[in-house]
Length: 495
Ligand code: FES
Image (cartoon, rainbow, N blue to C red; front, side, top):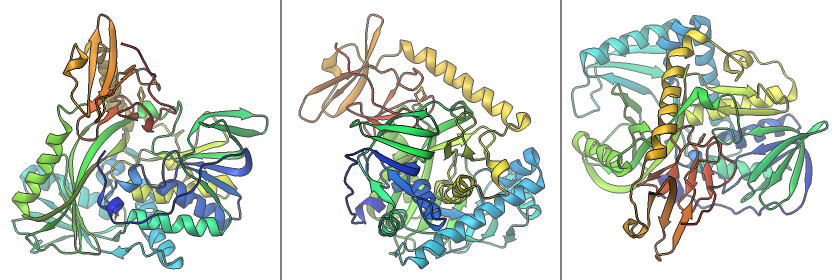
């Protein structure tokens, strides 16, 4: 798997796995931005919390984000105003602002050294169609009370930028320094943290929830937060979101770039920021999970675009990550519609650190029974048929197509065709197998049926993982659960 610039740049502490049964008020499952900020807010509210992470803190998408804290959210204000009205657009902007400030407040209060820096953000549009879209977005953003304005030019970029809009407020930060630093603060304040502690089952037992970990230990909690990016197990939000992969590069560019957040209006769009050390981080080349011919091609597209636009003087890291886009574009943050003691935040689109931080604040209020004006608009129970119907139908027709078509798929008919450190779906008669040959030549044979809802996983040639196109479940090459809704790994099989 690829590793991000953040992972290469940060030393970390190791936390031991949980070895004995526990009871607590709140169990937080997942040690990324959502989990860690929820724990911090609960600590402030005096709640007893335990945080468990299946792998290592920040090892999921929080360690692979590009960490933009931007007021110009992916949900798009023009769409929010159209689908939900101006008042909701105002509340979304206020929520985004709150998250941008909260990261800075936590970083400075605990001296995390997470390189938090307020910076301006600019969108630029090059074609007539892009200009029309940017004009529409600017109008809606201003109606929502956001400080957004058209400016003359973006002289700092080495090419004509057409229409340019400046946005405030925004910030950038180092996500892993933030997570690792805050974990230490939490630990000192009495929050228990366990790594390599994967939850594989969650049931309601009397007046509490009981979580069972892979090693058989259990945790009883009054409330549970599933901070696993997409909540593990079955939830009504899964068919209401589509998983996408996005790519990122850390480079030193020949053309000096300003310390701004920068976005073009392409589809998929490119996103650019600097880090405190002057390194430029560029993202884009998105595609639907499990739908790329070769994921390496998407990374190459991003490299080519960067070379062409700015010139690459030094190449430092490249990686990819997954995002979940809800059908109505608004994140789902709140209480599970089917389990009153279970809460989650998901559907952050490309604004993971922003909405993950906000989720930490909102979920804490819901858990402690404090009134919060954002409860309704982000609730997983919301249903706005006109906002959701078109995309919901489209994404679920694609899921149905994947579900059926992938059953007839095969990448090879014989294991001899599987090279070292490679994976292929092999078909023999009516049976399909997910086969990975490790670097030493050992074969790992698994059922390719995703344990979540039965779609067929696809081999990701860049990350060397098995990715599920339906709801973004991901597994390591050898089948262990990595991210998304499945709570355990692919089933072993015999060829
Ligand atoms: Fe839902 Fe695979 S993640 S079927």
